[in-house]
Amino acid sequence: MTQMPVRMMLANDELRTVLVSIHVSLRDAIAAVTFDNVLQTLRITHAALSRSLGRAPRIGVAGLNPHAGEGGLFGCEEIEVIAPAIAQARAEGLDVHGPYAPDTVFMRARSTPGRPGEFDVVVAMYHDQGLIPVKYLGVDKGVNVTLGLPLVRTSPDHGTAFDIAGKGVADASSLIESVRMARGLTG
Image 1 (cartoon, rainbow, N blue to C red):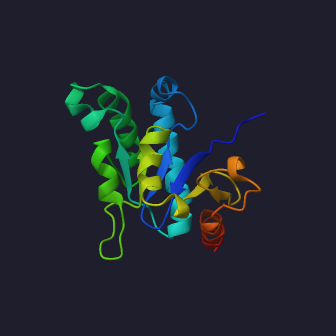
Image 2 (cartoon, one colour):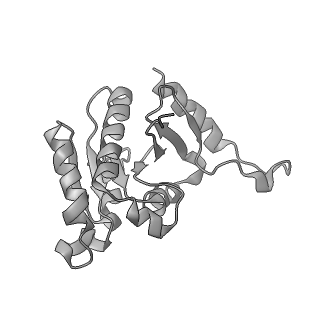
Image 3 (cartoon, rainbow, N blue to C red):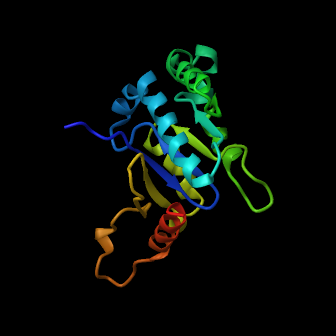
């Protein structure tokens, strides 16, 4: 059985981020930053957002290390892995830029009513790097979208919330946003 390559995108009305790795330890997330995984994430992101945006997406890529490695001072993953994957994606015609310092690339991508973001999406190297900025902007508006499937799959960004099930305290905002986004992705 062949596995279908998919990626998690978390999105709201201001920011989209796609993850190279998802629910794994930080040690395993670092190990997942390979040329093939980064390039595959860029390809999946490009294909999925090209369909939904109706044009090629502008993709910003976060580095793994602080300051995107600072030229090798804080790690070499940007030089040895991420930049070569970006170069290959660009050679394939994708509008990809980076790697950028993870602490600033999300601000550059954030789209507000008065200012469109510099990027349509940020590819983050691991779960918390990409999800913290989106959730900070409003967990009630966040939507989890699975990219790479032959169908549209969305869900609330906070998961199932079993801990509050049946207590009458749930907020349906993220579920409503999930349905709204699914509708928008199907045309």
